[in-house]
Image (tube, rainbow, N blue to C red):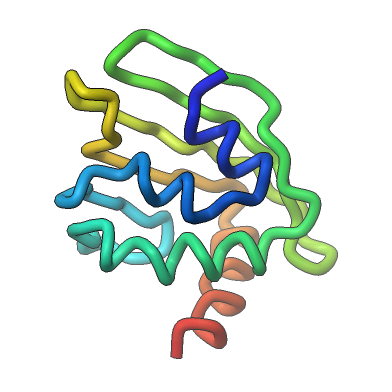
Amino acid sequence: MHPFRAAIEAQDIDAALALLHEDVVFRSPVVFTPYRGRFAVAPILKAVVQVFEDFHYTRELTSPPDHALLFRAHIGDMHLEGCDFLQEAADGQITEFTVMIRPLKGIHALAEAMQSRLA
């Protein structure tokens, strides 16, 4: 099991953030411009774990340094599926973190819920 998955499943956000490289590049399913740096990603990750209900990983595909963690969750009555794509440096820190979600209505629900928490 990937350490990021283990941290998220344990709801240990600090441990998950510690796995991110200081200059991690985070690509959100909601905005075009990537976020750069652990400091920028921290409030997003902390908010999303509050927004997603019944979040759970369903599969893990690994081919180091790349990892894909497939998940399911819901926001209210909107069910969604997604994937966390992680790329690691030689030291194991996550240097790139991309999230993709489907369906489109799920992305809209996520954007709306996140906006209220990050505003």
